[in-house]
Each structure stands twice: as C-alpha cells, then as structure tokens.
Length: 164
Image (cartoon, rainbow, N blue to C red; front, side, top):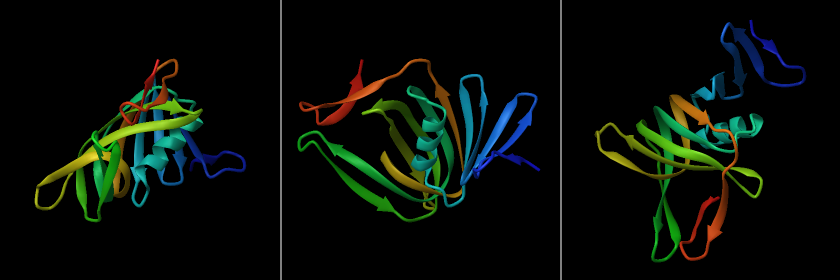
C-alpha cells in the first residue's frame, strides 16, 4: 500500500529506481531527466502536465505522448489575422502523436503542444492542443532540461515566441 504525504492526496511508492508519484488523475516516475507519466481516464492532459511541471520546477523541456481520448479542442492559427480558431471534437480517438515543449511566461508554466488523433473512421485530425480529456489512458514522456526558456509576445507574428 502506498504511503501518503502528510496533508496531501499524493501517494508515494518507491522502488530501487526512485519514487512513483500518484496524484489525482495521473501518476509519474522520474528516471534521470525524464518523467514517465500516465494520465488517467477522465483527466485533462494539459492540467496534469502543468501540475507536474510546476511541482518539479520544470522550466524547459520536451513532451511526447500517445494514448486514448474522448474529447479534444484544437486550435488553428491564421497568420493573416493573428487569431486562433478553435474546434472541439467529442468522440473517442487514439492519440497518434502528442508533441510539444515546456517553457515559462510571466513566471508560469507555458506548454506549447500539438496533437494528432484518429477516430473510428481512421481519419486523422490535429493541430495546436487547447485541451483534451483522456478516455482510457495517456502515456507521456517529459524530458526536462537544465535552465529556463521564456516566452515573449511578438506583435509582428502575433504569438508567444521563445525569448532567449
């Protein structure tokens, strides 16, 4: 039986390679600079990733993942209008690719994620990930990097770009 940290909903279980953190809606284990994350059914993916990054002070990193979802909202950026349009898909889909990065904007975790997902018709949709809820499980590898990468809004482009 996992032990719970005092006053929290976090279960901690250890093996010879380190601790497994069990949180509300997700679990993860750190090996080296990589976090192996399982996002559970009915959990919103971006919320889980932001919490993990904030809790572990991850200010620069790379994200890859696969899994199964029951809804996703994607954004499409129009460079002429400098506006995103969003579309939500409420259906069971397989994540064929989840890619992105971790940085910071205004001292907060900033995730830039893109996802492709395929439904029962085997057609693939995707774009900038706004939000997505897991239907079964989602397996993510977050590779953290030393240092910090910031974001700054570009009036010319209309996006928050890396700020070096």
